[in-house]
Image 1 (cartoon, one colour):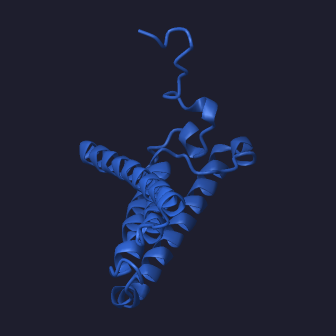
Image 2: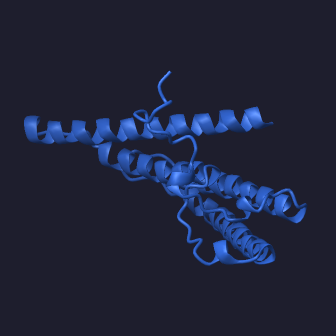
Length: 182
């Protein structure tokens, strides 16, 4: 199962790269065509905007897995274990509730988005805003997993504080540091 999840997130990382490259090519190419040749690619603006929407949501899923979202742990670090557990439970529960609202909102807007067609490209807008289904489910599963581990007592005291400082991330070892070169 872990291998499947790793492959899924590798695919997401690949999609982020593809979206970034597509955005750069479309926007830069359109600028060159407009200023250099007095023409342009009509779909470039719209497609780069859609790539940006997907890039944002996919990046949010990747950041959630890597615990890269912003957080303030000033108070939580100084609480006793029970206080940390309560704060983590409330935090994960509220995020799960928000993901549920996001899924419900995407579902309620589904019929409108299916029938709504983008003005230039001509595709159904559900292909753009349907990412809400994926994001809500994936992030909700992460929330459920943390809540399950919390309730069953599988989290260590360090894991009760979900904010990771950039200095605490072990895989961000500088290339120039001693011992990093092989």
